[in-house]
Image 1 (cartoon, rainbow, N blue to C red):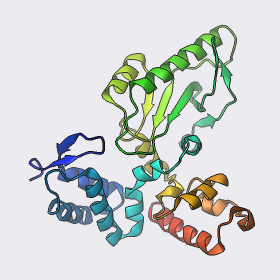
Image 2: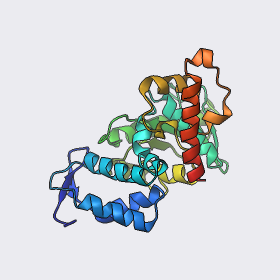
Image 3: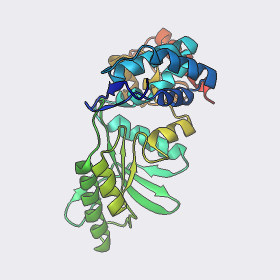
Image 4: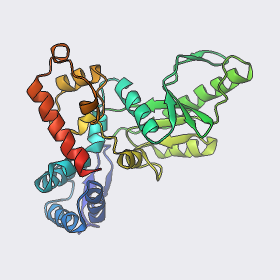
Length: 279
């Protein structure tokens, strides 16, 4: 059955329904093999030719929620990253935090002078003494890839910064550029990056991908909490509350945020459930 049914992806492309892929994503959400097999079997009995991946994901999430709400929340990580908007600044802050959680030095610098122009570099990453200019590419819709245009832009900026260092216009001897996105990369983007030795970090790419590091560090974004509406997200982002742990480490000023005490307690309860389940 799995080889006959075709499903429609968010970008309009088609692929074969894969039962094992459902099991793997369930494992990542924190359920055991028995539960993952059960969910995969239930979903496989409901799919049909032409069903969208969005509908499949919704079915899986509903079954995970029946098992435990925290598992359903972790399963929705990709959607949670897309809600770190509407601008890309929150995503940049989150990626900076993620690098630091991995043990690397990450800073948000002032504009850096290249040979031709000044550049607003999103993040400077220090990995064991090597410096990388990091470009963050945020998308808030499914099915959008970071393509060759994004990689070419990152490469062009790196070359100007590199030449600027050679002529003493800046003091960063960058090793290579790094492009981070919350979605996937196109094949052309991967090909050019491989050719020019540009490091990429995105959804499910490379082997140690963006989602790999999030699962490794357990640095869950607050948007992983179900039913967190736009207005509430905006108020939290304004107070630099981006990750679940921030809900406990920050001193909330209720009269300034406009968030009720009951709402904060509810958010903390849900956050604690996820953090406790995935220590």
